[in-house]
Length: 69
Image 1 (cartoon, rainbow, N blue to C red):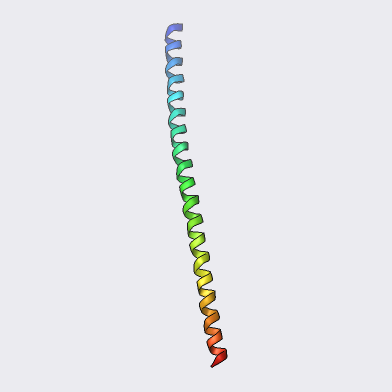
Image 2: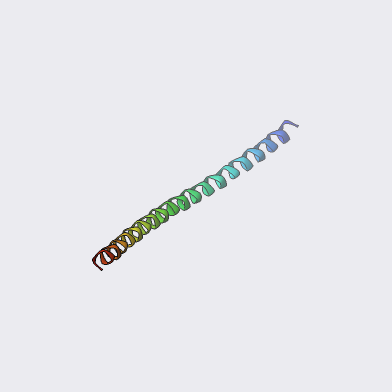
């Protein structure tokens, strides 16, 4: 009887180890994806900043033209 209990325990432990291994792999993938999204977010923020600067420049030129005319 105790041998069967040990086999069941071993199977449960192995199942838990397998589950933990899969979760670690998933965590690594999610961390990599998160890093990629952070980099993409920073890139988009930089682009947004550049467009804002361009827009300010154009508006400044338009104001200058209006004040001259």
